[in-house]
Length: 126
Image (cartoon, rainbow, N blue to C red; front, side):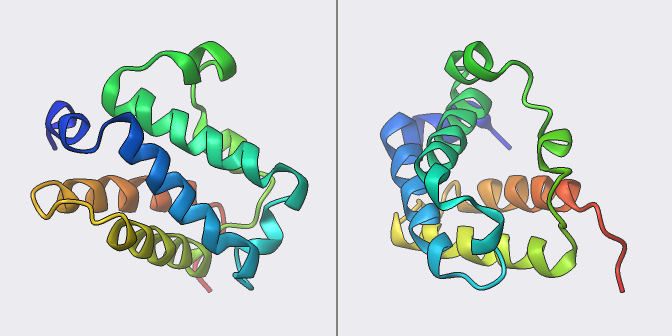
């Protein structure tokens, strides 16, 4: 995965749109929606946007505001199994389609999101 190429293709504005498209789906989702406090949905969207800018563009705002990402630790309070992982990936896939992510970089983002989503799992398969 070429992070610099992804950043060049998506950029800050594109990651802002991607995070917004993803979080637009959350309130109506029966599986993931309950995990997100309705009074902090905007904050969660901003954190995802800043994380993506940090990860792909080297933007330091996420780290300045939140420190090291520690994604697994931050998500530990939530039950994340295969179903939650798969739903998160489906919603992200829908968001990428809505934002018309370029076919040149989509496979790289899909791989990245799949690795991160799988890493977040904290429940054994049933």
